[in-house]
Length: 434
Image 1 (cartoon, rainbow, N blue to C red):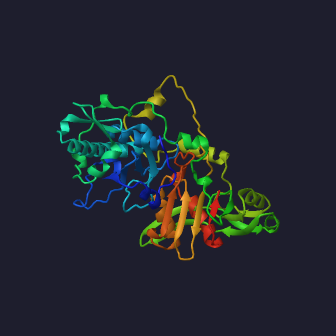
Image 2: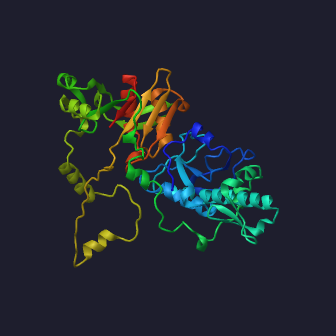
Image 3: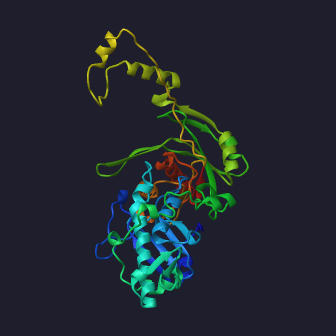
């Protein structure tokens, strides 16, 4: 299995002749045909090149849940592909084309189940038709098998790459009409297949957000207010600025509920703090450690584990605030019971502690365009939020979705990208916030 970390126009042109099959990945897998007659723009596609390489563009961000492998399994099974020839690429953040750039609630595989299978089947049918034309035989005499089309009667075969020129000139069969496999005939689906991203993660070539490096990039960390709703009262940054490698120290104002259009608001939840920008993350951390800070605690001053426990215990015996179901009279039954068993269950707050620390790299350019590199599960939402904060249209913001080292829902937020934008806007060079 081949996994490319870069796929640009130049790389694409190197393929030469190729069969490109467009297909639509609608929300939650609702099938739609793709093509100019429907007005839909394809948001994902598979490319088969003359050298037998197959590249699948996938929208769903990879956070360690295996979505890239699942997508490849679905498409390759219907395509009857040679597993070793398939690569996968992350789709660019172009929401006008790609309609499923985010993932959450374990819905990624469900959303792509039918579109990926149909795309593979569509490509397979084109290749079968192309082979039949080349041999001047009936389609029914041909079958797809492990990256080749075989003529059953004679055993002759074409590699997929040999057929792309002919197949690319054929009428494309509608996605919702291509025949799909029956479950007993699956080769990859339901089987234990090697994950497509394992080799790159083992040899270190996989690019996570924390691995991003761009020219002139600086590094930043933030000393944040430790109280919900609190704010910075004073900051002595003299010692921090003397730390080797520190380039700047400045306040980062809070971003809360912002109005971006009439009657439309966003709660971004960026806490107040002090940013330290340096030539390396280590230098930035040392600068942050040298800060002398005084915080206004605000309304969360007295909040603690003990006060939260007390509030919950009080609420547990208070009148119901929300009634989901009202059946019978449980209070009366409990009061009349001769024997009662009582137990108290308590769970602490659970940190969404990702293995890869939260990070984002942002470059705010002089021409007003913004470029973001981030391990996010919501690239198109990050794009729209940064655009709203900057007061520019979303097409002025480019978001590159990198691999993510875990998420657990934490990367469904965009506060860390917003903070990186705040810092990069002031520094006028690319800044990675860790």
